[in-house]
Amino acid sequence: MEMLTNFPFWSAIAAIFFAQFVKVPIQFIATRHWDWSLLTSTGGMPSSHSAAVTALTTGVALEAGMDSPVFAVSAMFAIITMFDATGVRRQAGEQAIVLNQLVADFNKIIKEAKHWPEKPEQEKRKELKELLGHKPIEVFFGGLTGVALTLLLYLAI
Image 1 (tube, rainbow, N blue to C red):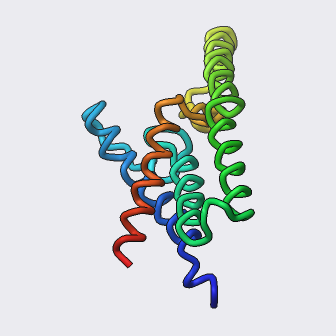
Image 2: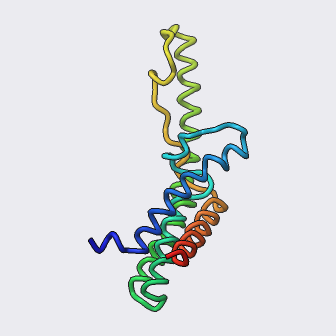
Image 3: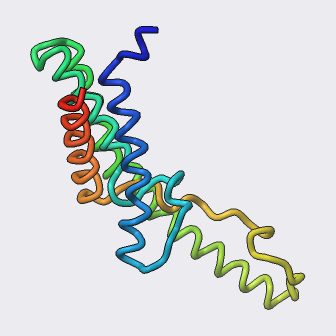
């Protein structure tokens, strides 16, 4: 039952949910289109991964102190996660965009050449996940979200 009172854990969970939820209105402001699929998708503004790891690290700092070994582990985990979000995962998303275009072009050629049976495109193929990673600004604001939310929660309890 100690997990129920683990402040760093719950602040990280809260940061994930908050960051995922706030993506919807941010996207609406940018595009004037409601996209509720953002609640469960990767990528976008702010980074929920960054929010979670910075919330966790901030919670650990508040509970155990910045001189504790568990803070060091949490901080390194946050750095690696945020670096990965802007590096490897972002590049994988960029490659997925190109591959999806190649697949679309190939499908168009096949359709024209062999009179591909008319059916919805979703049944023909599944697109690769293009929103895997984050732009550096998304990671930055995800990190700020995690720290700010954790400090607010800490002051509230």
